[in-house]
Figure 1 (cartoon, rainbow, N blue to C red):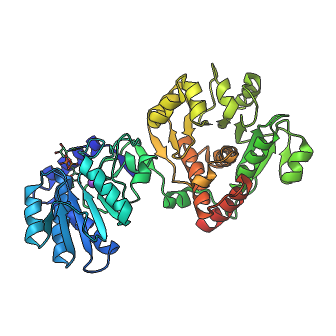
Figure 2: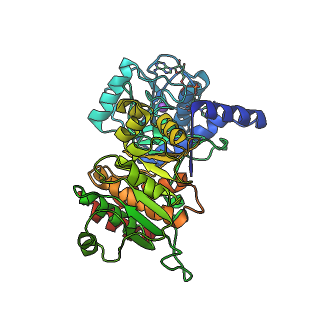
Figure 3: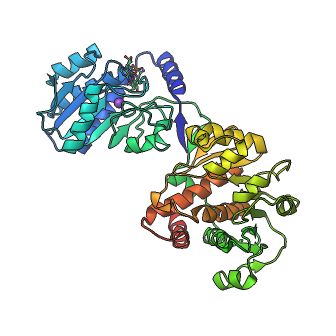
Length: 459
Ligand SMILES: NC(=O)C1=CN([C@@H]2O[C@H](COP(=O)(O)OP(=O)(O)OC[C@H]3O[C@@H](n4cnc5c(N)ncnc54)[C@H](O)[C@@H]3O)[C@@H](O)[C@H]2O)[C@@H](O)CC1
Ligand SMILES: [K+]
């Protein structure tokens, strides 16, 4: 799992590092990693413009400039704030870098953004907006040191102009701005080389593809349909058939041992689409409810709650929770609007603070909450796991129903052993990875099939 840390946690880790290693120059280690990445991005002897700020982020960039000049690159240093990290500047100039007042006439192969790092306030000075324009005009790639200047490391918001990067080399742990949209889109590919800075475990993590492959439940010779997990699905309505069929598609393509469908969609419709589905109630390891109900329905929800097995609670069932105690290890799968209704706040408030919102909702209902969207957050009220990044192609009607089905299968297979926070993150991540492995305008059913193929290759 990728660690995601806030600025205060990085600062505390740095402090602890310096106490324990008074003789280690961490900035040199950071600079070496930046220079190595720059070296890999351009041809030998190419031209690099290092924009360096007044603090330690500037120091990283200037020592990287020094290393690159020694390696034979043509290095120009520009100081947008006319203030600098003096020792770093001396080193850069001594190694053969050239200090410039402007960059307009330069033919640049790479821009290194070392203006602001975790000490940055949102926004960039006007002359840096000029650099952003220059980069856009010339197409020169940008390598950001730690974070793209202008972003707030602790926020997913982009509230002011910044300098978007193609690659970001960060230190210690991933920052929130690097894992959640829209800020994430400004970071490009994010690398976390090891400079020896150890950040103690934080309450926010992100699943990566290796985690997903390692966690995914794989059948073996002892498996049968019951041991792999029986999922009950009570979704859909006379008016909304499609949601239930999409749930079934997600559940079956995620590898359900057996699915029982107990909703109002006619048997013929279900079986003609998915012939392995058993119609009617029976013993199940998990329930999936809510998708396509067409409105809240407390009685329908209570009936499934009374089985006391973990539940995936989607769509309109989320509006029916008042006063109910949900079975242990249950998972809600709202989008921002549904979560806002649950919390009795406006949608923009959820979008503004997704982490706070999923945590609050989880504590309010006493279940795990998966907030769907471009970045997907899962919380048990204390910890937060961010799902692996997906493809924007899957932002379409039906994706959420497929996801609920995937989560249902996983809850039936693993709910007795693993917490719903991990199960929700796993479900959202596998769907996301399937989308990325098979980009394009596929229907949710086609995407579910492609996901099944990916699972086969992954495990
Ligand atoms: N502490 C350390 O030893 C290490 C720090 N590292 C680097 O140090 C960085 C943090 O350094 P600092 O704490 O010095 O902070 P920064 O270098 O990120 O920036 C702080 C300076 O920029 C100014 N500033 C910030 N935002 C501004 C804005 N929007 N407009 C105008 N001026 C602005 C501040 O007034 C301050 O002078 C990290 O991001 C990382 O790059 C790395 O070298 C690893 C080791
Ligand atoms: K930077």
